[in-house]
Image 1 (cartoon, rainbow, N blue to C red):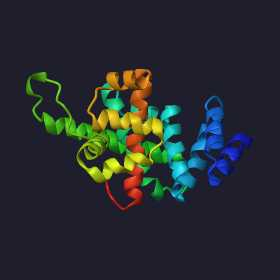
Image 2 (image 1 turned 45 degrees about the vertical axis):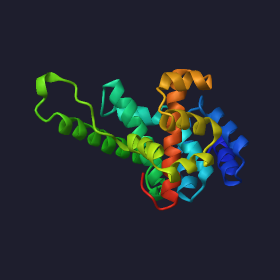
Image 3 (image 1 turned 120 degrees about the horizontal axis):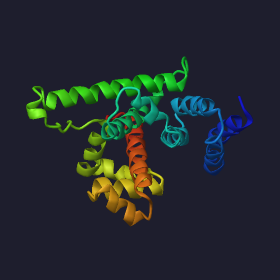
Amino acid sequence: MGRAVATLKAAVASDNTSLARRQLGELVDEADHDGALDVLAQLAAEGSPLAVELLIEALDRFGTARHAVRRFLVDETAVDDVTQDTLVTVAQSVGTFRGEAKLTTWLHQIARNRAVDHLRRVRAADPLGDGGREPAPAPGTAARMSSLVASREAVRQLLDELPERYRDAVTLRDVEGLPYAEVAIRLGRNLNTAKSHVARGRALLAALLASRGEDA
């Protein structure tokens, strides 16, 4: 285990958020992404909320989740949607991760399952290929999370437990119903960052629900 990964593990174990995030940032440009992900996943599986937060952030920031989804889908809109679904599923089910395989191996299986779900929804929406029209897929995992935020007061109350940058993004997108472009303007962030923060926030909400024995 490299020094940076070992320091990350110690920082998360001691709940030192600033040091953990700084160490994770340093790992972005290093080769041992997998080592950092494995450590975060193991700590998340043991019940560390900080590890869950940093794991979702890392999978998004490193592009690991998107890369896994791209193995199964090519349409960029579908990749965006299924990457969000994958992040939500990771957050919900990381408690089942046992470290018997690398985190990326486990992630790729989740990405595959979510991609298959997406393709099934597309076929179900237009089983006969009606006139070659592009069907609108039924809601996936992330979309269901968005719907819960919009419709359930108990879920909206959990927003207070999210880091501010994610809480604000999810509130504007899922509670106020603003388009991503407007969310970005309101928060003074670029569009991709706004989308990323919404995706991470939804995943963290799913993790909070899972920790309380509820499904997203």
